[in-house]
Length: 388
Ligand SMILES: Cc1ncc(COP(=O)(O)O)c(C=O)c1O
Ligand code: FES
Image 1: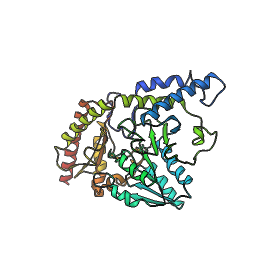
Image 2: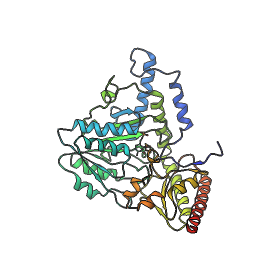
Image 3: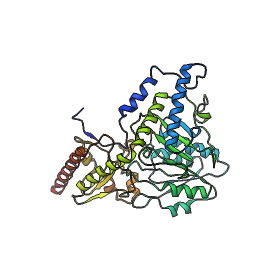
Image 4: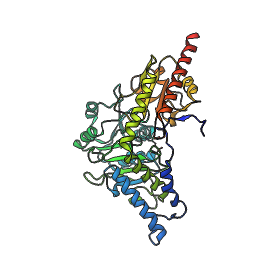
C-alpha cells in the first residue's frame, strides 16, 4: 500500500473513514432487518437506526426528518429533483434555469427535459467561476419553475452564493435546487437561511460509503410538489420506492456527523495545505489558478499549466500522485473540461489542467512532495517541448 501514489482525488471519491465502517458493520449481519417490517424487532431496530440517521442528516442542513428522502446518490437525487419538479409543475410553467458549470447529473436531466419540450436556460459564469446574480435575475420568467445551481463545483471547488440565489428565487416564487454533493460536510449549509427548496447530497465525497445519497425536499413555506421517478413499495412517503439500505444510511449519517464536528479545524488545515501547494507551484511561470482564489472548497486547488500537453502532464504525475484533470466520469473524454472552457480559457490551456483534491488523510509532508514532483515534471516537459 505504501508505494501507491499519494491520493489527491477527493472530489472524485474518498475512502470510508474507519469510524464510519465500524458504525455500519452491525447492520449487515446482526441488525439486518428491513426498516419497513413493522411486525418484529428486526424491522424495528433497523427503522430506529434509519430514523436516527435521518435526524442527523436533517440536522446537518437545518431541515426536519420528514424532508429527507434517501436515494442511491447525488445523481439520483438530482434526477429526482429536476424531473420530479418538472413533472409536478408542468401546468404552472416549463422553464428551468441552470448553469454551464454544473455536473452532468444536473445538465443531462435538463437536456432530457429540453428534448421533451421544456425550455432550459443555461447561464454562463464569470471568469472566477461565480454566477452573476444580475444575469440570473434577468433570466427568471413568470413560467420559470426551477433554478438549479450547485453549492460547490466538483472541478474548481467554487462556492456559489446560495443565500443570494435563494432569496432571489423565493421573491419570485421559483423553486431553488442545489447540488451539494461536494459541499456537504465541507462548508456550512442551512436550507432555512439559504432559502433552499431541494438539496442533493452524497456520502462518498465525505468519507462515507458509495451508493447512498439524500434529496432534501422542503415541506413547508413552500411545500414542494414532486413526482416520484421510481414507483413501487411506496417507501420514503412514496417519493422513492425501494427497500432502504440501513448500513449505507447509518454510514452516511456517521460520516456527516464526523465531518461537521471537525469542520472548522479541518477547513483551516486544508486551506493551509492548499496555500502551501499553490505557493510552491506558482514559483513557476505560466501557472494559472482556476476559479475564485478564496470562495472555494478548502481542499481544492485547480491549475492550468502553460506550455505542456495535458495528457503528458497527467501521465508524468501518475507515479507519485493520484490526481485528475476534472470530473472522473468524463476523464476518458478527449474534449477539454466544460467547466474550464466556461471560465473563458482557450481549449489548449483548459486541457493542460490538474485538479488537486486534498482531504482528511493528506499530510503537509505529502503535499510538499507533491509540489516538488509536480514542479520537476512540468519543468522537464517544458524542456522537452522547447527542444522540438
Ligand atoms: C457536483 C456533483 N454532483 C453529483 C455527483 C454524482 O454523485 P453520485 O456519485 O453520488 O451519484 C458528483 C460526484 O461525482 C458531483 O461532484
Ligand atoms: S459522476 Fe463523479 S465525477 Fe462525475
